[in-house]
Image (cartoon, rainbow, N blue to C red):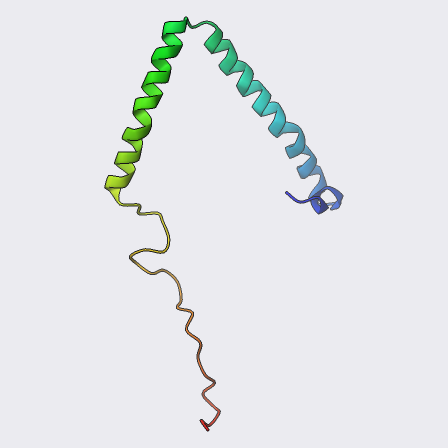
Length: 93
Protein backbone atom coordinates (compact mmCIF):
# COMPACT_ATOMS: atom_id res chain seq x y z
CA UNK A 1 0.00 0.00 0.00
CA UNK A 2 1.40 3.33 -1.05
CA UNK A 3 0.61 6.80 0.24
CA UNK A 4 -0.64 7.81 -3.21
CA UNK A 5 -3.43 5.23 -2.87
CA UNK A 6 -5.04 7.37 -0.17
CA UNK A 7 -5.44 10.29 -2.55
CA UNK A 8 -6.60 8.28 -5.55
CA UNK A 9 -10.39 8.69 -5.99
CA UNK A 10 -10.82 5.08 -7.11
CA UNK A 11 -8.54 3.28 -4.68
CA UNK A 12 -8.79 5.72 -1.77
CA UNK A 13 -11.88 4.29 -0.04
CA UNK A 14 -10.59 0.72 -0.28
CA UNK A 15 -7.26 1.81 1.18
CA UNK A 16 -8.97 3.55 4.09
CA UNK A 17 -11.01 0.42 4.80
CA UNK A 18 -7.80 -1.64 4.84
CA UNK A 19 -6.16 0.84 7.19
CA UNK A 20 -9.12 0.54 9.56
CA UNK A 21 -9.81 -3.21 9.37
CA UNK A 22 -6.32 -4.70 9.52
CA UNK A 23 -5.38 -3.24 12.92
CA UNK A 24 -8.85 -4.09 14.21
CA UNK A 25 -8.45 -7.71 13.11
CA UNK A 26 -5.04 -7.91 14.79
CA UNK A 27 -6.41 -6.51 18.06
CA UNK A 28 -9.38 -8.91 18.06
CA UNK A 29 -7.13 -11.88 17.32
CA UNK A 30 -4.74 -10.95 20.11
CA UNK A 31 -7.62 -10.51 22.56
CA UNK A 32 -9.00 -13.96 21.70
CA UNK A 33 -5.58 -15.55 22.19
CA UNK A 34 -5.11 -13.76 25.51
CA UNK A 35 -8.58 -14.88 26.66
CA UNK A 36 -7.78 -18.49 25.77
CA UNK A 37 -4.37 -18.40 27.44
CA UNK A 38 -5.74 -16.82 30.62
CA UNK A 39 -7.94 -19.88 31.17
CA UNK A 40 -5.00 -22.26 30.99
CA UNK A 41 -2.90 -23.27 33.95
CA UNK A 42 0.87 -22.85 33.90
CA UNK A 43 1.45 -26.54 33.13
CA UNK A 44 -0.94 -26.35 30.18
CA UNK A 45 0.92 -23.37 28.72
CA UNK A 46 4.20 -25.22 29.24
CA UNK A 47 2.83 -28.29 27.40
CA UNK A 48 1.64 -26.12 24.50
CA UNK A 49 5.11 -24.56 24.34
CA UNK A 50 6.78 -27.99 24.32
CA UNK A 51 4.37 -29.20 21.61
CA UNK A 52 5.12 -26.21 19.36
CA UNK A 53 8.85 -26.56 20.01
CA UNK A 54 8.77 -30.18 18.85
CA UNK A 55 6.50 -29.55 15.87
CA UNK A 56 8.69 -26.85 14.34
CA UNK A 57 11.71 -29.09 13.63
CA UNK A 58 9.37 -31.86 12.46
CA UNK A 59 7.73 -29.50 9.96
CA UNK A 60 11.18 -28.42 8.76
CA UNK A 61 12.25 -32.03 8.24
CA UNK A 62 9.08 -32.80 6.29
CA UNK A 63 9.67 -29.74 4.11
CA UNK A 64 13.27 -30.76 3.46
CA UNK A 65 12.22 -34.31 2.58
CA UNK A 66 9.78 -33.05 -0.04
CA UNK A 67 12.59 -31.25 -1.83
CA UNK A 68 11.59 -27.56 -1.98
CA UNK A 69 9.33 -27.91 -5.01
CA UNK A 70 8.20 -24.29 -4.87
CA UNK A 71 11.59 -22.58 -4.79
CA UNK A 72 13.09 -20.78 -7.78
CA UNK A 73 16.63 -21.00 -9.01
CA UNK A 74 17.27 -24.70 -8.84
CA UNK A 75 16.62 -27.65 -11.06
CA UNK A 76 14.00 -26.97 -13.71
CA UNK A 77 13.94 -23.71 -15.60
CA UNK A 78 10.76 -21.82 -16.06
CA UNK A 79 10.12 -19.04 -18.50
CA UNK A 80 12.16 -17.63 -21.34
CA UNK A 81 15.93 -17.51 -21.38
CA UNK A 82 17.54 -14.12 -21.16
CA UNK A 83 20.20 -14.60 -23.82
CA UNK A 84 20.92 -11.44 -25.82
CA UNK A 85 20.33 -11.87 -29.54
CA UNK A 86 21.94 -9.89 -32.33
CA UNK A 87 19.70 -8.28 -34.94
CA UNK A 88 19.32 -10.60 -37.94
CA UNK A 89 19.29 -7.90 -40.64
CA UNK A 90 22.70 -6.40 -39.88
CA UNK A 91 25.96 -7.60 -41.40
CA UNK A 92 28.76 -8.76 -39.13
CA UNK A 93 31.90 -6.63 -39.47
